[in-house]
Image (tube, rainbow, N blue to C red):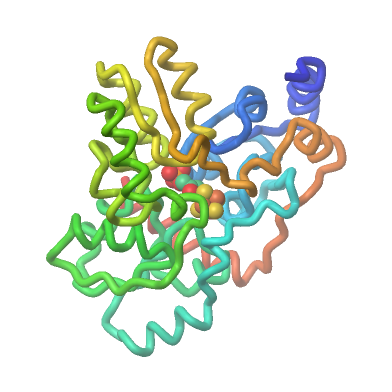
Length: 303
Ligand code: 13P
Ligand code: SF4
């Protein structure tokens, strides 16, 4: 790790009145210089309530965009300008409007992994940490859920009294894991605990001893006494897991599950981002206001 660059970032951050937020999928050295590290929901809460003028968001575009939607008066910077989320790009506003016409009585719930345009035509947002709670709290029985069909199917299984209308989106990183790979690990380590992110395929989710967000997975492993865990989500979470639990063993399927977009943030581009105020998230104010409603509804209903 480049300690001098980390020190420079910490110094510059103070001079610029900036806060650095990092998702658990970020590189270890990036997580280490952040003021707050967390899952999508937690980081969106911090972005909404923080006092600093500038937010440097070490994550992917929809996360930085969500921070800007919630905190329009702040400058929000995304160090890796091309860090997108392929799943977020699988849904578009026109498609959502068509679904609305087809199911006029349904509420539209969008996963936070979506574009500002999609949030603007949705009723309420959710993350993997509060999706089931939010759907339970909505009075409507019919819900259009997008873009992640796996998380949508998982919610449907948890909330059988509602009808979840699914979109055909998925995460390319979580999709790679198969049921057979998990069963193979269980064969070799019968005592291992399987902790799964709900973006995985449903047959993988069904093998989980625990299913939850990145933050939920970290809390579960840190608060239980088992020795070995198979962490079925992006490899970045192992950084925090190992820090908090030096005596436990953590494995990741496929050698490692890596989201290439999350790994585009480096200490170098975080430093440049602070120094040159790049790459700033700019949103049309009309669009931002519409997208704000669905995000703030998440913070109200997901409490
Ligand atoms: P969470 O941090 O909410 O679990 O989300 C995972 C993810 O895929 C973010 O892109
Ligand atoms: Fe998007 Fe999947 Fe990467 Fe999360 S892990 S940012 S859902 S591609």
